[in-house]
Length: 134
Image (cartoon, rainbow, N blue to C red; front, side):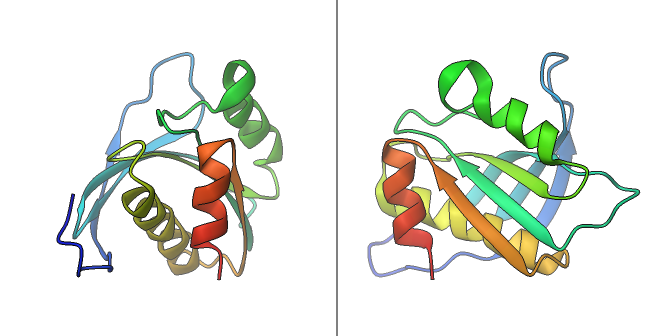
């Protein structure tokens, strides 16, 4: 966990990683000032989107979300017109750090041309989404 007085995060680089075969999307690591955040992006490169959604899970983190991979399934279904970003928390269960990870996701989507961004959270992720919302 970072110094309690430091409530900022910045993206300093990006790296790709290979997602498991049962996962769809593109593996992306957001290199941040607070450490690396793994994520999976769903988007159609042939159809640029200005809308995005960030999926944040419960207190244990992970990329799939509730209900047997709901975030993966819905993210792929939305991908023709809406970019989805599934975030895996750096420090699951730590509210402020999870909020910082979500804000890094918002920064990534904003920086890639997305002007309308929705935050969706399950259980603990609901608190993260509320705290991260403007």
